[in-house]
Length: 262
Image (cartoon, rainbow, N blue to C red; front, side, top):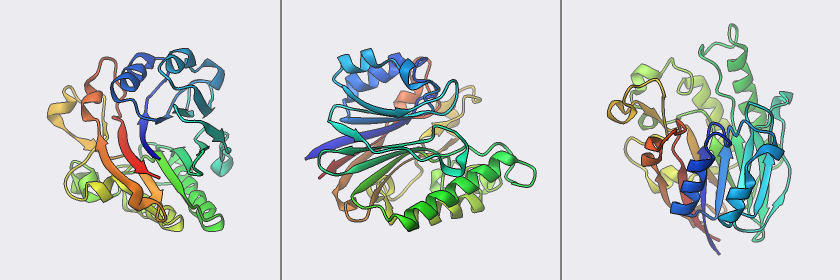
């Protein structure tokens, strides 16, 4: 079984329904994982997605904030969602394909603007969230699993436009990178995107603040596709659809794709 999976922080699924449908029409991934849907589950505009063949959905939602959803052409089973750190946020949902592969869709807290948990509650919540991810994976070692989502951390020096200038900027600070690495190691997760594209600058997010995001190109790779080591060699054909960031009324994130032969 070969299937293509995509992850995309959509920054409001209702506001950006037209470009979700455009992506589904033009790229036709078998599975699309969305983050920051900003919608209760019953308000997600499923009719248009179903018309394009995405008849299966699992989701967790809340009004105006957070929210994660998995849209699929393939049958999927809802296998739950974790409320890490007990924040009451819709930040994780998991689904299982008929071939036994579990897909985890995460939206890790952004962490606010100041990288100091003593003065910024949100930064502390982000670090605690990653710690609970680590402990969960240690205690319930994942197998035959794929993890995707907006993890809100660009871990490598070439995952940001300037390593030196972003060392004290939330999303690339050493403490965040270390917390993410511990969660990754705990689950024996392999970074599929960088397995396929091991060298060079690679971004999936560009700020709305830039007058010309494309020309400035001050990006960060915040969106990730991981797989457990038992199936990581099945992943290939990774790509970031940078041009989607330039679509009408875009998200500030671009979709990240990978294909698996399982």
